[in-house]
Image (cartoon, rainbow, N blue to C red):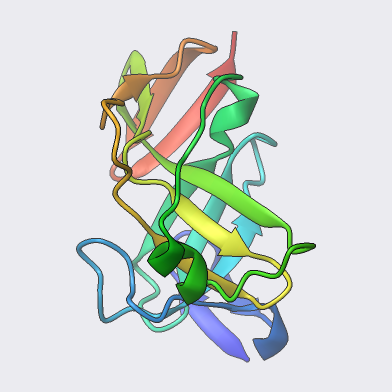
Length: 153
């Protein structure tokens, strides 16, 4: 499948590599198919690229790489929507945003990915964690439009 993107140009992606988000993402409920792509400049960042809207790409990180004690408690409903089995690997990712000099991640609304079934969902965690939690490891952040380029300290 060929998709045209604003950030990555034209991409050829196998349909079996896509993630289905049955409920979409918060604020983008109609966008259900996404590709997970590595960032070409920063290995700790990945991009969730919409298949149907080339102008929609969301930078993601693994919050545990930056916050060792980060935990998410899931309800049975949230677990059910991902069709998890006892041996299933579940990836927990958080969105990244920023402006010059400050990069943040949303610890309250993580994105969950079932790699085996290629299913995803975004939840609002029942905790007191911040929506804009500063990522202290990034010394400089340059924002060009909606693109966040990070350089590690």
